Length: 303
Image (cartoon, rainbow, N blue to C red; front, side, top):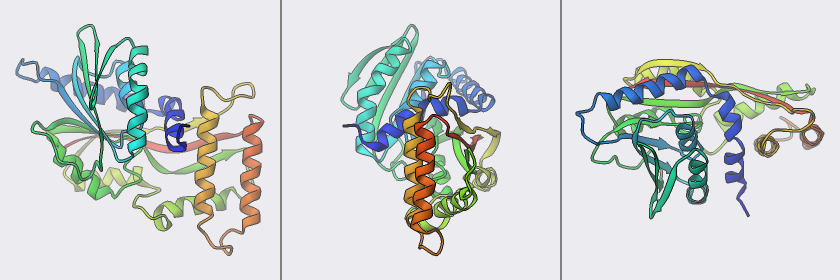
């Protein structure tokens, strides 16, 4: 049975597809192409490292949308062994759907399409602690990642991986807005406690305002901010049903919020109120009435 984490990551692919800021993405794509053109004429690929690669949806997206240079070496790192295993199983089919011929290797895969060559290495490990390769990376991708780690540590780790003038692409960085429709009397308190849980309660670093924090943390860490823009999750039903597997995405998010609320004492939010809010939202999801809007920023920077 597919683990809930992997199911959530796979189900949010289409949500992220819609949310990604196209202007920032195009600038990232242009920057990658420029780094290939600036080479010495050898066959060396553009090197990309992804922090927190999840189930590999960003690799599939960049390849299928045509945002990768002709020759790419892509190192995808995630600390969850089951998540990397899911990527090993499903990424080849996603790339084949995008027109690539795929062959597997012990640590990843090789995908070809015409003159395009994409070599993917899938790696289990802590992205903030792994050592760089002999050749520095042209780009680091950190999608939906910088809001769940210590920002200063992450920016330092990315800088260690990057070549001079290398690119840091940080899309879907949470920035402090979680709104459900139809409105519920407890929404304001639920949102406030959920965001405070990210900042103060949960047993891991991160911030509910990581997007805006990033805009000042990058210059402080020696980066130049090249582009930034909104990238909101908007999930809504069509004719009473959710597209793709986005009902799974919403159910997973509701469970995450409920888990955060459960960490508070009754004086903050009593169990009856918490249960009533969750049951109302689940009923709305079941009936195809629930809408989510969550605010993120996409940011592109140069080291």
